[in-house]
View 1 (tube, one colour):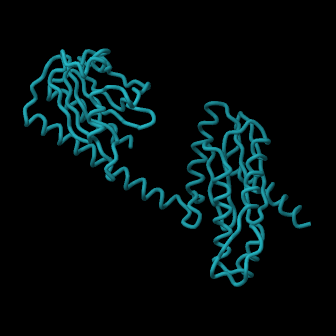
View 2: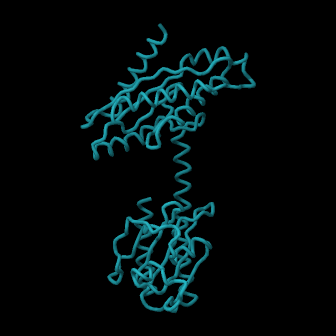
View 3: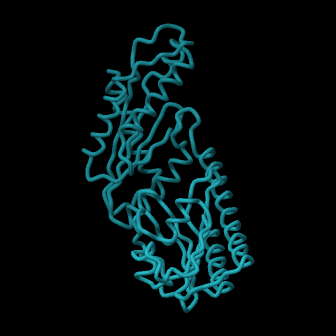
Length: 318
């Protein structure tokens, strides 16, 4: 995506120069957060050459809001003395009285944001200039299509098809990112290993479809039990892992208790089962906390949690 952003910056700068505008922008839209400047032109006339990290609310009376709501291009050559724009923050705060904007759409038709130019003077863009904006818009939307295809392929390569969780490669990729952030902001890292007990029993006594159902049940229980900022994955045949920022071991104990409680409510129904299933999946678990400063590698952290899990499994089999 960074390569695309560099290209978009050149597009915005060129678009602004060719139209002789005061400023050009790529505005990102989120229905919850509102409107946020993703890129802004670097021409000397632009009063805001740095993007703001403070979004405008979704209900703000912005020129861009007209584009987002209609999913259509909008041109306002001169908003001076027009009551409908009296409280427009673009006009009130920056003096922008002219606007030309195009919607930027994801391949599924949902709105990514807008490509737009602003001017502090009235404008008279002709049809050719507006078509030029459409060409710039098409360049950015082509990148959005490529980005979505890349995400689809990455998700396919990083996801476990049975449970829908991250596979080992996906889990480790996200875990390395989490650890880098933890080192920067001095967080503690907690890791949980979870193993489905008696996997051979599930496959041999009930059939492989039941074994798959048991694994999916464990994956669902983990997903329901972890926090939004945690990551999880199926890292082996019957092994799962969770990683997140924690205060102490109690945070991990709480997650494990939630997983066990969720599994206790599971009633598996597998039409092709060899015999009626009268039990719920049971798990063994291991948890370890690594306090900052974090000197261990991810591999070392996972090895410690894995060892704790096998200790739990041995104790449960006694």
